[in-house]
Amino acid sequence: MLEDLWQRSTSVQPSLPEVWVLAIGLAALVLTWSTFGYRVVRHLATLLHEVGHALIGVLVGRKLRGIRLHSDTSGLTLSRGKPTGPGMVATLLAGYPAPAVVGLAGAWLVSSGYAAAMLWALVLLCALMLVFIRNFYGLWVVLVTGGGVAVLSWTASGEVISITAYLLVWSLLLVAPRAVVALQRSRRRPQSGTLSDADQLARLTRLPAGFWIAVFWLICVGCLLGGGWLLFNAG
Image (cartoon, rainbow, N blue to C red; front, side):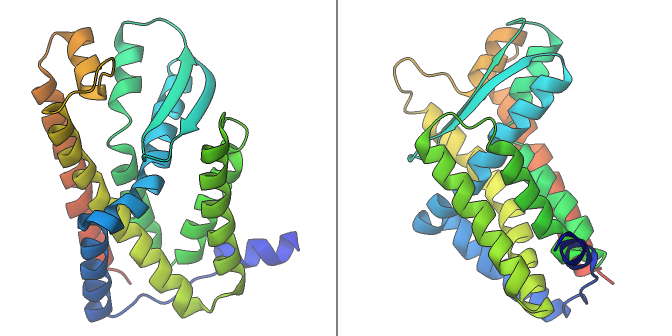
């Protein structure tokens, strides 16, 4: 089974015609920028958002305590370490760009013919996250995401795998700037006792939250442009 899994995950799928790439991109645009579709895709974006916080936090020496994913598409990463300094800034900064960076990496894999590898990498990420999830809803999101992608990757044809990978990559590239727009809107209606990543960065650095939102936006749009270029120039 392991040998079969390795062959499936490393197999090369043909790139899709440009008209298909465009059509899938437009479908992802409708999905991520519509109210209902955004809420669905946002669960995956939040998962990757929290993975971004967790990964960078560990790399800068913080101790990861757990990750929570909530039904309102919000999330929380708990880590222990110095509450100020460059490490904490990097940890907070990593969240919003994370889905876009994963989307860009996925675009590189898909454009190189490794659509199956991109999907199996997501399954592996979900498996690793099971160790750190600290609430039942988060566990459900990770199991449904990882299990669903695993079943599809194991049973579907190469063409279906390619289409799914393209749709997933486009969705990540497009949902990332959409999430930054939602962040900006939410700051106009602040909730008691909660601080966004941008507001926390503002407190740590004395740079305004708007500056950090602009940084999030530039990174996400840059990944979108780079990922789109890769997808349209696959082969």
